[in-house]
Amino acid sequence: MQDLIVFVVLLSLGYFAGTMAESRHYRSIRKRERELLKLPAVTAEDFLDEGREIEDVRLVHGSVVISIDYFKRILAGLRNIFGGEVKSYLTLIDRGRREAILRMKQEAADADIILNLRIETSAIGQNANRRKTIGSIEVIAYGTAVTLKK
Image (cartoon, rainbow, N blue to C red; front, side, top):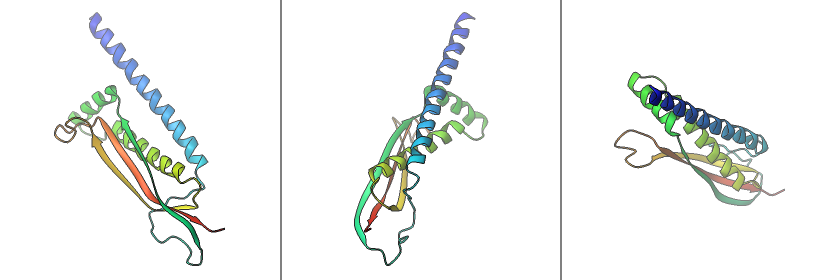
């Protein structure tokens, strides 16, 4: 009985530590999104006015690898047995996507706009595709940073 109590306490402690780390990451993301709000990133290729002269064009990218913590992986496994939405994977993908876009925007901080934004996602880890388990995801965001002549 004592071993079960120790296991449950350690499992709970790990779950809450992972949740706190995720919350801290989300706070950081929201802060940086507010700072970079004035730099638009759009999926359109031809979003510029035809009369504007372009000073500089360059490819920019941002990438991130984020791992799900062990305790949320256990809960996701249980959710896979019983069915339903796996929220721990949703937050993993959301954090990765937003972080990759922020890193791309930071690389293009002096640009006026980022055109043709694209986002690629892949699961990585040992046997990620065969066992249908996700350990980590890689997200890369890339686009064309355009600086207009003033």
